[in-house]
Image: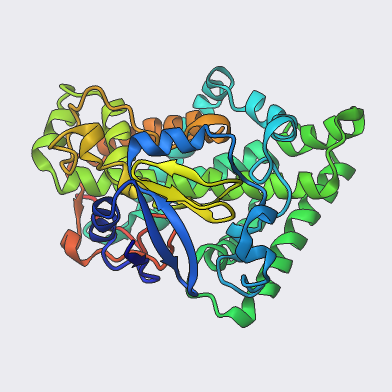
Length: 402
């Protein structure tokens, strides 16, 4: 099996995803830093593995981890070993840690957030409208970032004064270019910041999910301080990064497919289709780390060996011709059915999927209603990916509002 080296600079994600699919349903890959693992690259096999009880989240199953081959200053260590939370356990323990979060993020409860999301969106659009006419705007920084960060912070009870520091630390947390010497301090700083937030909520609880987690622990659900802190960090990280990329990628896709954009803007195609096709075609999450095989597992005509690590390559899955047919590589807002798994599948499916869809479903139509002549300020070929192996993320999205 040929080993595919994932580019730490993510210069050509589409080409890399195509190479992964061409390698078969299970590809042998090398992550930045020389860490070896396997990637599932096709839709059907991914669904199978994501519900297979022989594939677990316990890092102690990983043979390379047992042998001490994964350094603690590896830039992706925070994603490989993020501490105990609903992300890193299975079975009854996973259900215990996930229950409160899942209850807070049901479709019905998330819908109650719509009015607040609309208000935040309109406030951001007002700020954009007040800028000098003709000025180039980074739509990611000025619109796509503030909305999900404000929404998830309000949900979790994180003060806006912490946003700049969170942004700085998460930039390092996700990047493959963080110098190894800075990784341990970055991890310690993240832990200290979230511990401070939890301690503040314990002293002054509010109407937020962090306070609810603390109260549940004190009422007998037995969440440890580590579990509360790590759950908060997980939800903040996943709750804003994915939605930022979803909004940015949707705008890029619409601007580079004007005929389809017109069909959406004239009401022929609903915005829901834009969101689902963006999630499939230019998914916000390119690779998810890690799961581990407790025994040899057949994957198509390949074998995932016992003790090996598995990543789910959502960028490759989304354009799998065996699932979506010969037009899998096309952006098509009329695609039906569109049964992608961009938010995962099985027990660990993303609990924030409904919230992310709602935010994008409010933000995108409001943006184009306010600025129907919006256009990219540079050719799409000049947009650059950030060096983040796990997130499909641009440095910026320069636009002219029109």
